[in-house]
Length: 425
Ligand SMILES: Cc1cc2nc3c(=O)[nH]c(=O)nc-3n(C[C@H](O)[C@H](O)[C@H](O)COP(=O)(O)OP(=O)(O)OC[C@H]3O[C@@H](n4cnc5c(N)ncnc54)[C@H](O)[C@@H]3O)c2cc1C
Image 1 (tube, rainbow, N blue to C red):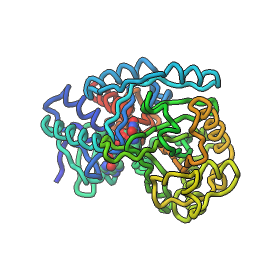
Image 2 (tube, rainbow, N blue to C red; image 1 turned 30 degrees about the vertical axis):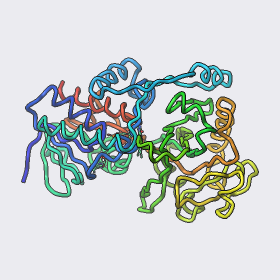
Image 3 (cartoon, rainbow, N blue to C red; image 1 turned 90 degrees about the vertical axis):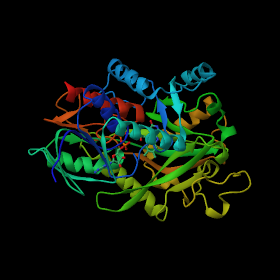
Image 4 (cartoon, rainbow, N blue to C red; image 1 turned 180 degrees about the vertical axis):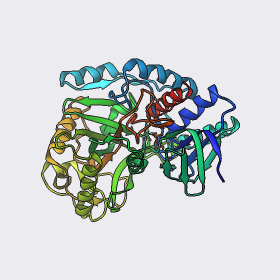
């Protein structure tokens, strides 16, 4: 049965939620539908839910000036009413960092944890239902007929006035297929590749002062997504364009203090900009993911810093014990040699930045510290937008991490509001 909606939103992540709330606030009688192939938004709202409310964290400078981002961030803050965490001693670390040419960003942050994020999602979805928004969870968008303004899902056909496609990073390839179908030019030449670092909390004490410290190193490397308290490293499964599986590692933590691990984890990511001959960042990342799978026997690779410094692979039988005195929080990872799997230019930049970090926060390069590889962030589809509201064709908008307009929860939410502003105009 065909239905007509004023707005169909694909993806119940922060982009979709931001757009839905903003649209409904301005058109309370509108018929709005949110589709999600999962029961819940599957990105960072659901995993860890650390939110940053300061430009430029999460924003791509290709689409956002400070002024525009701050305007929308204010709207996000008004809606989410975050409880901003206190920071201490930031100027001490920032001063040490500056001496090495490293920048420590002073960011307004809040952290709900994986459990708190799930509670927030439930609350927001209930609120939207109360406003009259229809939710179609566990329903997947399959394809689009842009001329007929028709969306085909795995259950039905839907017609729309406005369509917002916000499928996040997990919908990276789906979005690319859609862009091909509707003939919108795009490039995906940027990718973040790196390692996840895990160590004892005492070896990275800055987290007591600043929950998720954002260091930017001269080698285009940055710290990203720091977790402490009940913190764990996890692996996420992806599928290559040829349908072959590979893993990327990630990290999260719970607000529930009974799950305390005593560990800290964070990503050290290098941004790689591919230029002539223009290659796909996604395919490059897939090849690296696959190479790690090959060397890790189908699993991500982990190596102790002590072994790495000696240019020795780590081995399962000696991985824990002696100075290597904590168990990796990620099980099912192969002790090995990340330097065999990682392109040297990326590895050198990350290692140099880690040494700088160890000067700023002494301890992080303790021999027991674990480096997990690969951590890959695919977010860089860059469609050719027709306007500043992320419209790709009449009535069709694409925003959020999948469309490269954000790389974090708050920027994604801001992207959703900005897209909705375009529709409302
Ligand atoms: C494990 C993990 C942890 C993260 N932690 C943080 C964090 O702590 N802080 C932070 O700022 N950022 C974090 N991020 C990044 C953050 O999730 C994203 O920046 C943000 O969620 C992007 O929002 P989005 O709305 O664009 O996409 P998403 O939040 O990814 O939402 C997209 C939604 O679209 C759905 N979807 C995809 N394809 C289809 C389809 N064909 N049909 C229907 N539905 C579809 C997906 O199921 C998904 O729920 C994390 C990401 C991951 C993966």
